[in-house]
Image (cartoon, rainbow, N blue to C red; front, side, top):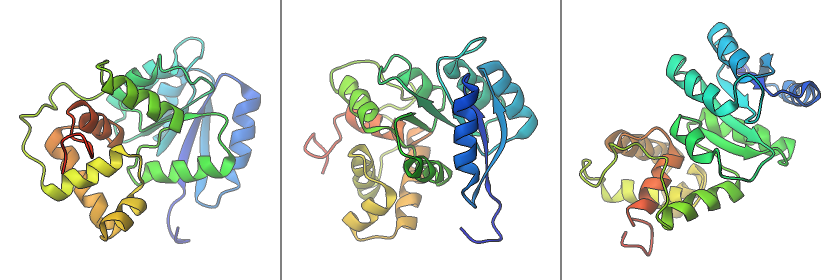
Length: 228
């Protein structure tokens, strides 16, 4: 990131003070990150999101007063420019669909390495939607098995048609590829991939890559599932 760029402003939300301080110390060691605030529950997170207007909220799920899922819903409704990443110890998918439906940009497990957290926060700022592999498997597996989906109800097969290239890009998103990997696979630039994803999301009336992946799976459009 160029030296003239502003750092990514982060709000940390977790009910364990030791965990918050440890993550804050690690994150602040990165030149392009700045922890601008901390909160110990969802209600305080909503209040500080209004007051601080961070770029990213790193949000725990299980907290007193208000949990992270409800806080995510309120933040995305009231401060829509703020991105929310769920960071949890649990591999249970109990909260996964609600968090994504309410606008969480990613859903990660706390056992990830610091370097992975840094990379994933940067990915969120590129409008990518990181999911821990275990969570992505649960999400897409449940959709394939006919379960509920986090995609918006307005996203239906009657939505304006995707171009062939937009569909190819979303199929690779559903396979878990990053923009760089998709670009390499299709012999195009990462910027072109980003544009295709942006256009496809607008057509499908979806918020993020995770919802797009769910759309592809739900409608049988994945590679080998009826897609080209």
